[in-house]
Amino acid sequence: MNDPRSSSSQGVEASKAGPALRPTRVRWRIMALVLIISALTYLDRLNLSIAGKFIQDEYRFSTQTMGWILSAFVLGYALFQVPAGRFGDRYGPRGVITWAILWWSAFTAATAIAPRLPLVGWFGLAWSFVIVRFLVGMGEAAAYPNSSKIVAFWMGASHRGVGSSLIFTGIGVGGALTPTLIAWVMQRWGWRISFYLCASLGIIVAAVWRFYATDHPEDHPHVNTAELEVIRAGLTPARRDAQLTNPGQRLPWSKIFSSLSVWGLILSYACIAYPAYIYYTWFYIYLVRVRGLTLMQAGLWGSTPFLAIMLLAPLGGWASDRLAARIGKRRGRQSAVWLGVACSATLLWAGAHTANNTLAILLLAGAAGFNLFATASWWAACIDLTRNYSGSLSGLMNMCGNLGGWLAPIGTAFIATRLGWTEALDFAALLTLAAGVLWILVNAAHNLEAD
Image (cartoon, rainbow, N blue to C red):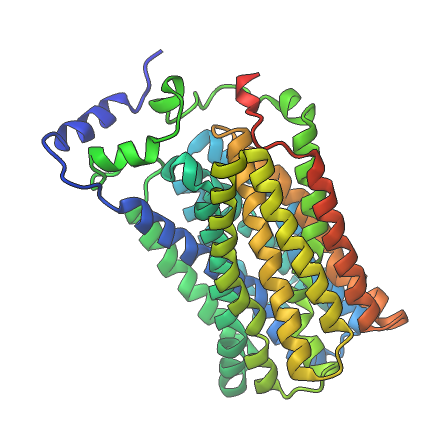
């Protein structure tokens, strides 16, 4: 059966005929856009945690009620990971990401009018916020599995860790900018304007992505033959030119669910996501209510975990690739994960038990950075295990991770109100270590498609 893209690819190749002195660098521009999209997801994810104090005070929501509102995003995000990843495998990530950005931007704007929506009369005020945030999460579910799909086809086999880490560097960029930006906007124009601003930025990013990106490097008019060879380096001859599995082919779920490596990935990711989501939901409020910072101080200090992520996430991807090349994919990916979780758990525990605010926040920030240092290896391993179905597998993994993340705001509020914030952070440190232990089961050198 002929590849429906073959004539298009031949035309592009023909236009690239002739000597190419050096590879073009379109793949890095594509990855820069992926980083920007990732930053946008965290701008729209964290804005509620910053605005949460204003909303909680204005509508007199209890801490437990606010925990449910903060968790609604994560539930929608988790439940739609697998369908979103499968859509990317079947139809291509470019279109799926475009529509997803437009969807979540629309409901980000709707957050500002949640108290006036008909949902209030049907379900109540708190549930109106819950439903809107669930729908924001539903849209953002497409971002990471499809970004992983972009990494699978645009980055060479030896740069999967670096490519995956750029997704998480976007978390650092978005997270570092969001507290200060949203706090500044809210103090001048109110919390509602901040949501309209985030939605407007989403429309701009969706348009740029739609007009510049392609699903595969062969489809891009500015990719030359030399860059294609760089991207294809490390692939076996049988797979070198196979840039797209037949979209109609049935996903091999039996292979996926019978793999011990897959179970190790998804269970460990549920553990590592729990502490990460404390930073995405409660951290700003923790700084104000527990550490006693002012709103602007919390906005500035709330950026520190994400600055650490900006620095350590790409370093973790680089280390994962270097170790995989030097000691093999299994031991290399494991070693990068174990280093990251050991440092993260230690710093998280130390920060929770430190009285001095400045030192405590710096320790907690380092814990967040090392959490994402390790996380790049999870996503690189998804591509290692199944390149053609990486969208579906990473969606499955991220679904389980975000179910753990969904429990984080609720569980943290439960432990903090009954035992204290120190104990809540100690529990998160314990789960971080559990994530590392479960990586004993993961063999990133096992190619599921070769079975």
